[in-house]
Image (cartoon, rainbow, N blue to C red; front, top):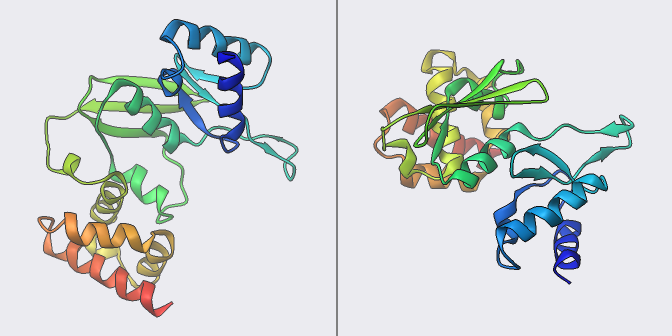
Length: 202
């Protein structure tokens, strides 16, 4: 019965979803879930990405192949597994919002956890310990937005870059940033207000 419940839950996940064993811990103990998950890995129902972290495969009919995992979702899942707070570096953040089309060679995050590196499908995820609390008090997507703006630089934000960023960030994130990020540099806060205006003018 528990095995069936686990399969039903995974079946209800969106293709490409990444999850951890503790997502099922309400059903039974950790070791039982681990055994059930391993059987599903052996059957090809799910894919093991890292120890204790798994993905429901996503198939592309256009490419005629299974797609790799979403590196941002995987990073958040690693942090969730260990209970870390994490903040992306600027290079990661500008790529996330489309301000750079060049994929990072390494996805680097500041973290409340220890120094760690993971290699998944040739992509390197690096966590660097930080005791700075300022950014950790903002929600995840506000962190991404602030880091992207700061890293990209005030002098580089022409009208084209502003429109790209505005088109790739939800207004809810902008509103959260206007509430949570009042202590950031003035130019960053003013740019966030410009993004809100651009969203309204679309």
